[in-house]
Length: 167
View 1: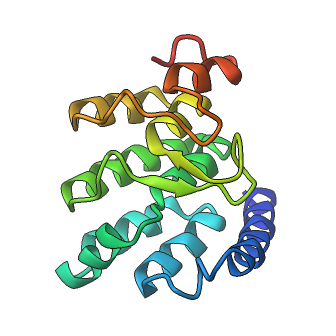
View 2: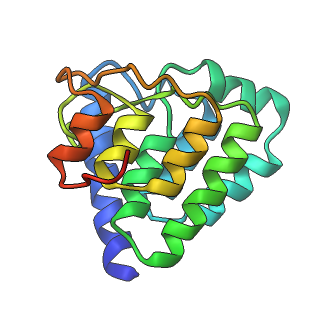
């Protein structure tokens, strides 16, 4: 609990420094994106879901048009946290998809994923073996033919982390 939150906070501090150096990812982001990314960094997945549920249509539109997604960061954060956070993750992804977030969103790696750069949500979910999230993405017609910045398909991402049965 507290350890995961402390680690998450350190990761988000590093992310902000890296993002600023890479052209203002944090400073140019919509306020709701910055808010949910802070909560994700502190592994507060339920709070992120609540913010999406109560967000105005304008706030949701700002998330949909901003080029960097947040769900991949939520998957990374919850996949390594307590089981309750993994359960909350499924609910968050459901709400996000219902509110119009694309299943094909890209999350910026910020040096914390398989590589530094754009990471498709399906690749992140496959890498961490989050099968219930993958099922939601498949139901939402996610593009299965994507690759990450390293050129890895979702299947290769799953295999890279020993998640052979994820896809």
